Length: 171
Image (cartoon, rainbow, N blue to C red; front, side, top):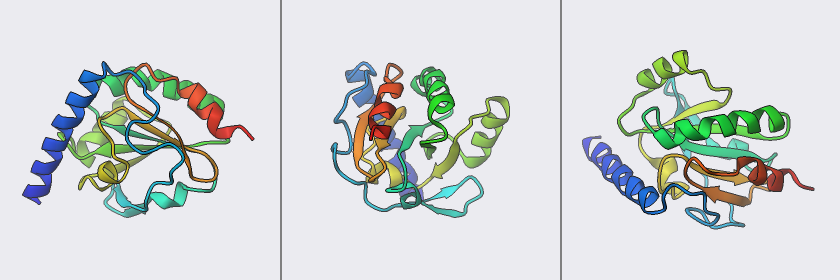
C-alpha cells in the first residue's frame, strides 16, 4: 500500500506540473482520446464498497470530474458544474472521482458537510481511475455521449462545461 500511495503522490505532482504548464485551460484531446470508450475500471464509494464506472458508460451522457478537496482549480470550476447540473441533470449523469492524494474518505465527507455537491462522489484511493482515464491533473473532466464515446476532455477552471455537455446530448 505504501508503494501505491507514493506512486499516487508522484502522479499527482506530475499532474500538477502538467496543468501548470497548460495554465489550467480546457483543452479537448488531453488524456483519453476523443471518440474512444474508456476501459472498465472499478473504484469505491466513500464507504469502501466497489463501484464499476462502466455502469454509467453507454446508457446516457456522463460527466466525470477528477477532483480533490484541496484543488483550487476544482473549487473554481464548481460553479460551472453546478450550473451545468441544473440544466442537464435530467439528461446527464455527473460523477466526481476523488483522487487518493492528500485526502481520505473521512476528509471528503467532512468537506461535503460544509460544501455539499449534487453529484455522485466516488473514491479512487488506489489511482485506478486516474490511470484508466489518463487523468493529467485534478479538475480533469471527461464527457461521454450516450454511446459511451469521449466527446470532450479538459482541465482547469476555465472549461466550457455547458458546450461540452451540449455536444454530448445533441441527437
